[in-house]
Image 1 (cartoon, rainbow, N blue to C red):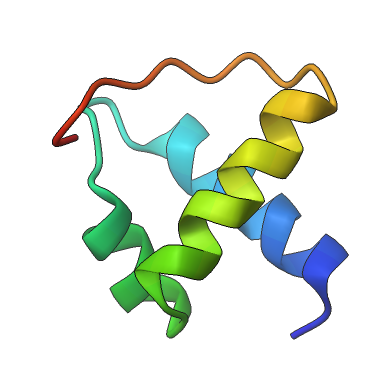
Image 2 (image 1 turned 30 degrees about the vertical axis):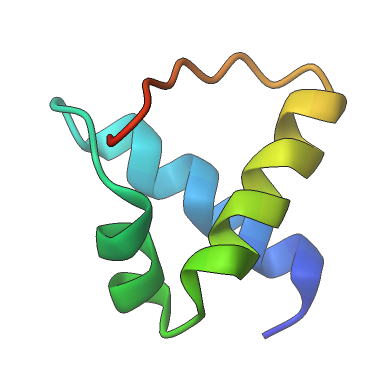
Length: 57
């Protein structure tokens, strides 16, 4: 999966999920590592995508 497609998928998952979702759950759904999830979330935040997060969630 291309990085741009993966970022779009993360946004879609976050939008459809009413409760907070863990990096591990995102990683499992997208079949990527948790570290990649963290990098992708950082990229999205850097692009001013409003993402709320808490430690452990």
